[in-house]
Image (cartoon, rainbow, N blue to C red; front, side, top):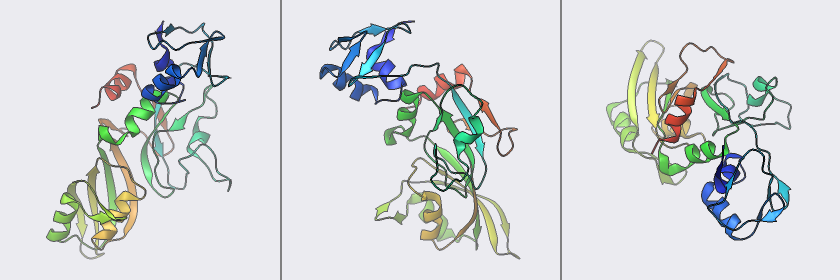
Length: 238
């Protein structure tokens, strides 16, 4: 099936579609050995594409939903020899990489893909993909702290976007609380830092939902491939 050249480059994870268009216009792309600068150029699986003289690998596109366990690194490799999320997919014939990250000690829903265009879209801040986290925190949130979380708190010198806060369970004897937090951003240690900003440490943290996707019946370490309909729905997110 023929597709636009810039889309094929984006799907290979080389660059976003917009950047791929600039690379084509700049004469950095060859198709079957010939430099191509026309953005409307169509290619299919039989065509060989080179970017800056390096052939791109074009393989069938797959996206998986992984229930990441705690104690696993959200990278493709680790110089300390720790288990990574790609270790769960070693038997598959294509290379997958995570869309975004979950902290080493955070469990939950993580998407793995070889679709560069989908990954670029979902990780771009303007799309504001909702993510739901469940946290077990020390102490019990006060009304003013809940208000602060809902309207944004300052972390790392900036104010977070408004969040949804849902109290799941309160244990006054143990002085702990389970709180569900829905955010649209994905900054480093964001959920932990948000709770810390209002005076509470996080004991356990899990991501339960990403956009419309949930863990459903998966257990820690299990995964499933997304359906074509689910991938199409992700690509339609604004």
